Image (cartoon, rainbow, N blue to C red; front, side, top):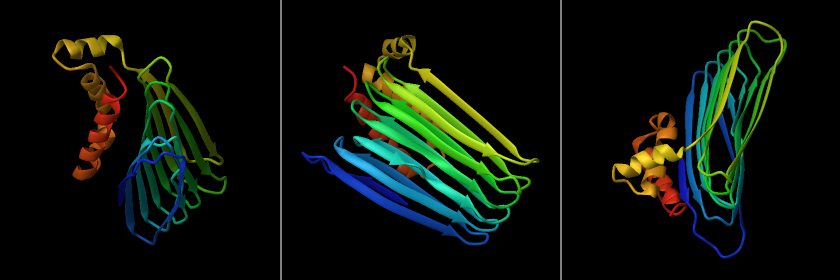
Length: 238
């Protein structure tokens, strides 16, 4: 598990990393990343996992800050009944682009994958989801669930979704769901009428949007992520 807060520099900075996980037969690996980068950092990361028979790899990935983040955690499901899961949360503020997603490659029978991605775009921030799911013709009994939800805070914020799901053969179960929503003025007004500031109301709306995912995190990570969201929203309104 990993968490980091980067120092601020006056010039553009590059962070490039490679993370590789190998889960042998029956093993379970959970890898959590909560990153808060300065707005001049270019964050380019490769994350890949290999799951053998009845093994499980779970990526939990939270991205805040940076000028540009490009990151698509992936799992190759090599062994029968292997399982891969990606939970992704990204927040893009003014001048930031969060280009995140996931890759799931099924390479054995009865393998299961799950992708749940949520993004928040603030001001003129841009979020992009790119997903790859591949199930070849010769396999049987594979399952995939992909969910992509985006929240727009302002009228100038932007979100894009590029799912690529390739399923060949029969006897597979695959489903995909995507939604885009906006924080309504009525919601903010209601919360402000109850004594909250605009920043507090925005923060409450964003935390509610990601709460079902954050509730799965260990306590220290959920507290840290909520604090970072509060700081981002405090600086983006008013």
